[in-house]
Length: 562
Image (tube, rainbow, N blue to C red; front, side, top):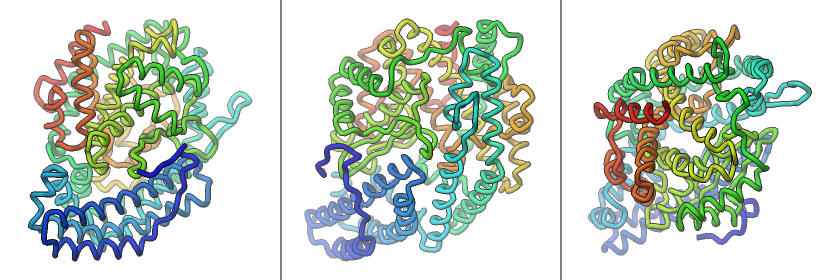
């Protein structure tokens, strides 16, 4: 592992891509000629080490590019990776063929696990030299999306605010300010709507072309393989969305009706949805630095393992949390293989969402930190997304007992709001998922048709949604604020599937906290070493696709909330 003090001081060096290609080509021949399992293992480790370094440098460049999308140096470095990594993948494909045909494959499986090589074989279908130009184009379009979405700001009551600043204003106790903030937020999206629509139309065309080049039936099939959805298919997801419509939507409708009564208003508009109390939402005390210190204390009290993990994060400053001009929207957790170090990126805005980051993204980071130190290869430090989000969402719920640290006398309000929000967002997740399935199935290049589709799906999954006359949003413009649609297609229903696991751990923790934590920790230690359904079994969790799972969880949560 490379030594480093803090991430900001860690040196970035552009890889020598030609040297990497040469090394891989030599490794292909060496693997074919290997005369012992030790020799085969040595070749495999050497290529893995080179691959780790490549991914580390790419991740460093990406982090620094998202921290400041205006930084020309790291924008150029990302362009370099976009152009070269697909070519490296083609060379790696030849090496993977040599590995899968090696007489020592079983020995490698003993060391790295069966799934590692199942993944290798299936994911090879996603690599083709004729698709390189399409991959580069897609990466450039996503990069353009980042810049386009990060740039806008607007004057609001004497302040210059971006999207995140306006979201905070939409939680103001003064309803007039909330409505004005929604109007400003809508205007900000309208100002870039033509650009975003153009980018998305090009992305749709590009992604469909990629699927055709790679020989898939359609882009959906390609993405299900890319996301390693080996245990379920689009029909399973469609049935799951129907369970959401049948069992989650009615519960959420009742939650909103209770919220309307608490607020003392005749009708709940979109700008009221996040306002859970007439006195205002629970807001964390203190600034970023103080909140990180409180989180450190919390994780030491939660468990020995989480305390060690968070000390590591703080010591090496593996966070970039505060929003700034030019910073990419959103939040994420990533992993730096050479350093065996997670990194957390966010945009703090002074709302409860800041604390959510210190639990949600920290859940991801804790899992990767734990799994890799337990021997899970860094390539599968994170499991597939529908399990990875169990790690993050469960951590949010399992840290409920410490919320007094952040919210003091409003901790109970935060806990109730957070639990309800975990439910309220699930129909929206189904909406995003069905939107994407339909867009790619219909090859929907017409922006107007996308607006119509989104509007119809809102009526299906979120019948309570009312934008109070905002023409842009009522026409279906809300879809474009979901960055997953642009950046990582089909990655959103995963949060919903994971929510079921997180809710189960929460419900169990109310009766036996120690046992719930034991199962959660076991799940984290396994990383992505097993498939989705196997990991659910390892974590003592139910299969959300099975009849009765969603219905049963909703019944238990209804009793807790009402």
